[in-house]
Structure formats: structure tokens, C-alpha cells
Image (spheres, rainbow, N blue to C red):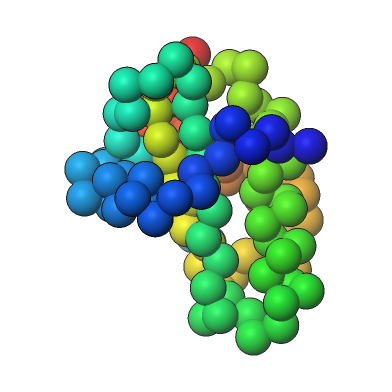
Length: 113
């Protein structure tokens, strides 16, 4: 399970990432990152109704993203906030496909050690 201390939960934190962050994108997933000045890195996940009208599908996408980040978390540099923004093409993708894109975006952003 992805612990609460590693999650972005406040609107202010999300706004900080969107105002000051750097943007990286792929086919069905985008990543926005910003420094946070903390000894840990925190992550947020956005899955809008444009991805799917059904909450079950949106929640599955969030679970896939959280698990992918959790598995690569030991290799991620501390001191960053990151927000994953999903696009419509992510629905129906397998965990392996999602994990591959998450790792690629994290490497491109320089968050992976």
C-alpha cells in the first residue's frame, strides 16, 4: 500500500507543482514535477472524467499508478513532488504497460537515481 506520507493530498501542494513544475509527457500519461524541500518525495494522481465516466475504471487507473510508483519508490530521489496526469488512452492498459511508461517518465524527469 502507498503510505499517506508519500501522497500529495492538499490543493496547495498540487497548485505548487502546477505553478513551478516541469512537464513530461507520453502517449497516455503525463508527469509534472517540482522540488518540495522535504526529505521525501510525494506523489499525486489525477484521473479525470475525460478518461472514463465510470468511477470503477478511474479508480483502477489510480491503483495501477500507485502500485507502479510504490514498486519504483526505493530508486526515486527525495525532495520532489510529482503529479501523474492520465489521458484517455490509459483505460484498458495492463499493469506492465502502465509500469513501463511510469518508469520511462520518471527517468526522463531525472527523479530516478
